[in-house]
Amino acid sequence: MKNIYSILANIPPAGTFRACCGHSVTLKGYTESILLTSAVPFMFSRLRRYRSLRTLREHPLPDHLWRKLRRELYLLRNLGVRQAVELRKRTTLLLHDKAIHGAQGLDMNLEMRAVIAAQASLLSLELDESSYDGWSEIIVYPGAFRVTRTVTDEFGISHEQAAPLSGESWQNGPLVLSWDDVHRDSYHRTPGRHVIIHEFAHKLDALNGRVNGMPPLHPEMSIEDWSKTLGKAYSHLLGQLEQGRECINPYAATNPAEFFAVLSEYFFTAPATLRQHCEEVYLQLRKYYRQDPLKRQEY
Ligand SMILES: [Zn+2]
Image 1 (cartoon, rainbow, N blue to C red):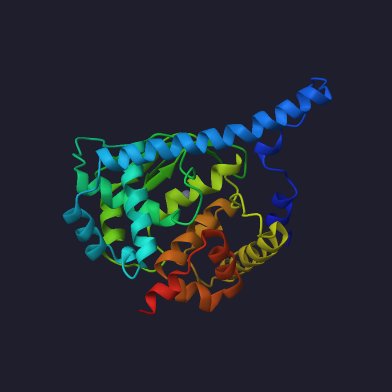
Image 2: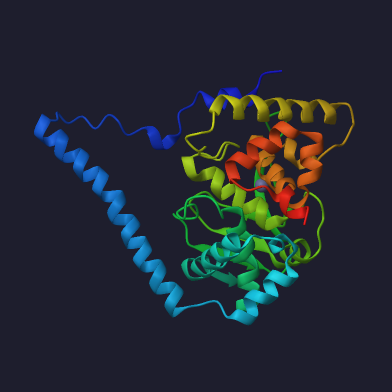
C-alpha cells in the first residue's frame, strides 16, 4: 500500500512558494532586503510582547476561576510550575484574542469560554505563540449541529448529506464546537475523545497552508521520520479496519488530517494506550508537541 505521508512529504508547504518575485536585485538592494526581512520578525515579536503584557495587565484571569479550572479539568492536572504559569498566560491571551460566542441562544459566560481557551492552550503550550494566529472566531452551539454537504458516490452521483457534528475547523476561518461535547470531554475522561483537542489540532495542521496530517515540524525533526512513522501506522489502521478489527477510533481512517487530529486526542487523553500500541507514533507526537502527557499521568 502506498504511503500517503511520503507523498505529502514531497510536496513543499504552500508557504514556501515565495522565491520567484521576478525583480532583479542589486547587491545593495539584496543586502537591504536581508536587513529588512530580519528586522520585521524582530519588530513583530516586540509588538506581540508589548500587546501581550498589556492584555495580561488589563484583562487578568481571576484567581478563583483559574484554580477551579486546574481542579476540575483533568487535562490540566499535574502540570509543572513553569507549565502552569505559561498555560495561564496563554489562556488569558487566547480569551482576549478570539471572539468566543454562543449560537442558537447559548450564553457563553467567562468560565465556559475559559474551559475552551485553557484546553486549547494546553495543546500549543510548547509551540510558538503565533500558533493560533490568522483567524478570530470560535462559535459554540448548544449541542451537535447539522452541516449539509454534497458528497459524490462511487457512480459519480452527487447527494446532499446532513450530518450532525461535534466540531468543525475552517481553514483560515472560524472553529465551531458543540458545548455538549466540550462539556462531556472536558470533565469526563474518555480515552481518545476530546473535541477541543481534535479541532485545534486541525488548526495547527493548517499552519503550513494545507490540512494534510503534517503540521509544520520543528527544525530538529525529520520530515522523513514523521512520514514513515505516521504513514506506516495509517496503513496499519486501514488494514485492521479491512479485517473488521477495531483498534483506535475508526474516524481516524478518513484521511491523514483526521488521523493526526485523532492521534492528538489519544496523545493527550490516553497517552499510555497510544504509547503501548504505537510507541513510534507517540514519540513523534512528543517531539512535535514538546510535551510528555504520559509523565503527567504518573504523578
Ligand atoms: Zn476532524
